[in-house]
Length: 159
View 1 (cartoon, rainbow, N blue to C red):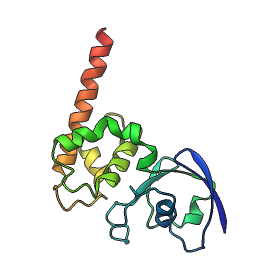
View 2 (cartoon, rainbow, N blue to C red; view 1 turned 90 degrees about the vertical axis):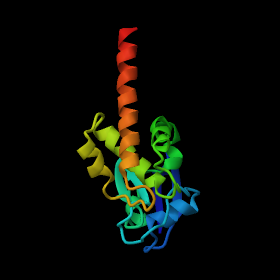
View 3 (cartoon, rainbow, N blue to C red; view 1 turned 45 degrees about the horizontal axis):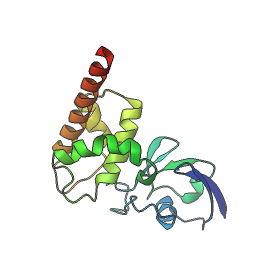
């Protein structure tokens, strides 16, 4: 079957089998940030944004993406670059395998809740599994980013 979608702001057409998963389509299109982990919708490694909402691409048929917009980390580098350094500064990117899923969910969180509480951050990141860090590093990194952003806003308002 032929499907049309927007992938990282570029329209594409693809021929897929009815049982093709979105993760497989995305990886075939060079989106290698989308990782295969548990294949049971439990780890968050395959998180992408469909029409701005985080979805687990290992649980979505590619045909469901027809006429939708899909964003992967490859298409959100500029937005992600604002805060990934803060996460790295906290040692929360030890192996890096889970980072794309965390980054995708953090982008969705900050779009929906620009100044989230720690509990809201934890709730958004709850579906992402990380075997290295224990999650507090990610939380500290996001909090440091938000605190820095707040300071920058105050300084720019005083100029």
